Structures are given as structure tokens and as C-alpha cells.
Length: 253
Image 1 (tube, helix red, strand yellow):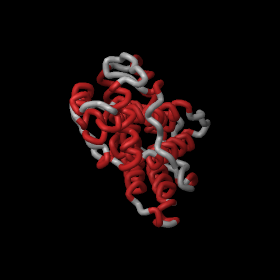
Image 2 (cartoon, rainbow, N blue to C red):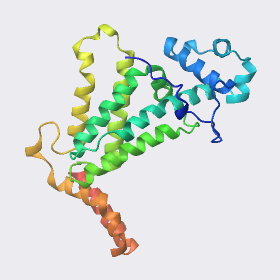
Image 3 (cartoon, helix red, strand yellow):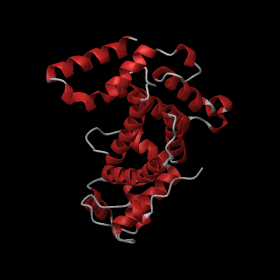
């Protein structure tokens, strides 16, 4: 699989919202960095190598991006836009658990196809640096998990289910990126095995357990997901008590 191109002008943009001019120093720096990352990983993307490939002075990199880390973050976020476009364009399935399964596979496909970009986004995250693309991707996951909750298909609350799915999928991708090519069927099947284990843990009717579904917890989670629609029917204290009870039922199973 090939590295996702980050040179699409439709996915680029300056932090101030102004469009980038094709062939501008900033554009050349971003393109050069993406190429070096794809060819040799983060170790290859040195200031000297980037400035030589882009045909600019090192000082230009610092003027445009602050420092090398700022440049790497800009490249990762630009490349991530392609993944977000694919997630937004994914067909909507009637089965919300099937939709989560498709979302997992799309995430893993992107990560293993673009290891350098993925490792920049998830391998060594910097909590001080905001990442709008990663935040948007997580928001999409929350929406998909919310659909499953409203359909009565979750065993746990929405934030817990989303956190479990996200952390497991990121761990799988980073493991696959680091795995040797000769890892065999066990490595190749890792994503599907972990995916089904996680879905069985957070969803009813997944992993072949439809006959043993925990109806009480699933219904509590479903009601909790739609409870805000009925907020006006309760006083603040009553609504708080209702959601506390539903959360307790969902956790207690």
C-alpha cells in the first residue's frame, strides 16, 4: 500500500485560513516533508534535508512553522484530511454495529497505509498541541457509538464505548506498523480479532452473543442516550437523578 499524498491543494490551508499558493515556499516545505516522511520516516525529516528538498533556507522553515515539530504537526494534520473525507463519505448502514465495524476497518486501513503520518498523529501525541483533525475523527466515532446506543445495542455508556474502541484501534495500528512483514496470518488477523473482541465487549448482538444480551443494561444506555430530548419534562434535580440512575444501571449490568 502506498503513502497517502499530502500534496492535494484542496486539503491544504494556512492556520489563518488563507489558501496556500501552489509552489509557494510553505507549500514546497510541506510537500518535501511529506515525501521524506513517506520514504524514510520521521528520522529522515531533518531540517537540513527538508530545506534542501524544498529549495529554501532553514530559516524559512522556522518563520513558517515555528520549529520542526510545528512543521511535522502541520504535515500530519494536512495528510489526515484525506482520512476524514473518507470517513465522512462512508455509506450509512442500517446496522449501527456494522457501521462501527466499517469505521474500525477504515481507521486501520488508513494507519497501515500511511504509517509515518499515523505515527505523527498517534505515536507521540503532544497534549499541548491542538489537533482539529483528530478531534473531528473522534467526534465522528462518538456519533457512531451514539447511534448504537439509541438502537439499544450498547452494554456500556457512550463515552466508555468510544474510548475503548479508539484506544484499541490505535493500539492495533501501532502494533501492525511495528510488526515485521513476515509476521504471518496471526499478525494479519490481529485487527479483526481485536475488533470483534472490543465490539462484543461494548455492544449487544456482536461476537455471536445475541442470545445472551444484557437487555436491562442495553435499554438503560439507550434511554440515557436520548434522555436530553426530554430534559424539559423534568426539573434539573429530577433530570440529574434520572441520568444518575441510568448510568448506574448501565455500569452495574
